[in-house]
Image 1 (tube, helix red, strand yellow):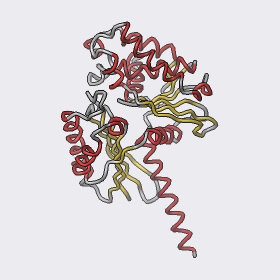
Image 2 (cartoon, helix red, strand yellow; image 1 turned 30 degrees about the vertical axis):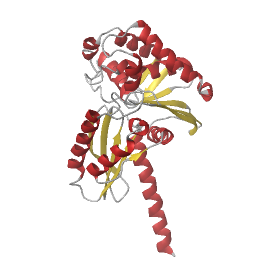
Image 3 (cartoon, rainbow, N blue to C red; image 1 turned 45 degrees about the horizontal axis):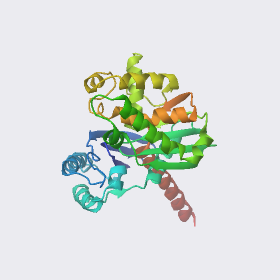
Length: 319
């Protein structure tokens, strides 16, 4: 039996999942933790991680360590994504993080982050032909899946936090700022030449902002378990209507929307712009939401490695 822990240090939140892997290959969830750390907050054009954000992040990692350090037969994989990837003071931060964790914090390239998203989605949802969108705090990963395989993928260094800080007020969203933000992101989509191969394909959405869209709609439709969004579908019309409703509110109004976390209310408009524009670009008629992404993709990769190792050991024993 093995306890497999994955720490995913994103630009807006830090998350940890712990999975027990039994000797027969079956798995069961042990623990899930999430803390909003806003690591990418106020990085500015020079992409410097700020002391306050670093302190919040190290505190979260310490909280995670307090949980996993008491587990037997622990295998820990800790990864960092866009904020750390872009940071000009990355080396200094990684030293601090490793001292806190006791293991190196691996900085994932954007393409590897997209690949793990693909694994997490395709192992848990029907996705033979689809476009996967993972919107994080400081990046958006897009994967074109055709015939069950990756056709193309990209990581765009724009997400809920840095789109908001570059274009939008955290309080009242003005028409001109929204227009500027959407035009900017739309121009980026237009330069991704292979996206036109995904025309009319359904979108699969993951990441905090996209999952929030699902939770808001489940609450609006009085679905009791608003957190259970895996496999939940929404039409493009429902996405547009909800986005319009969110944009029309100031910060206090957004905080009052059922299903929208108060910790995310200031960045939710920026976080939903990639989804709204991608569905419009592709002329997709619906989106399916996934609770499975990067952390689950890392788990599936590890499980496959264990299976390969077990087969190799059996073959060696037979010699």
